[in-house]
Length: 92
Image (cartoon, rainbow, N blue to C red; front, side):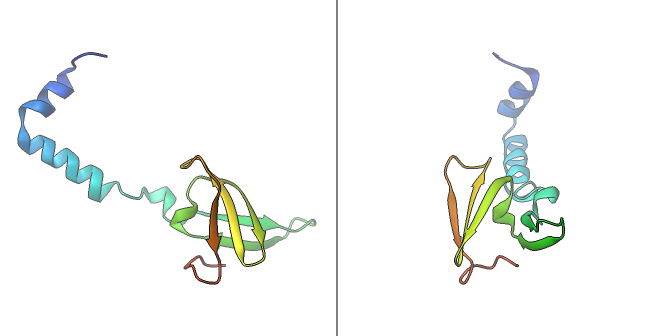
């Protein structure tokens, strides 16, 4: 890739570096589309059965509820996550 004009400007100015850092940390922490992320189950007749919403469920690809736990896979992590539904803030 090498050097680019954008990288040269960023490295030249400490103020610009600080602004880019702050924008990345505070403004873009949770994109608007991921704030109300969740997952939904559907009954055999097509009616919605349950829906769980939480920012932690962003980019979820699949989930399974077993007892009081919700197991889910996500594009954001390379492992299966488990949430205790009795202790978490996930809304059902």
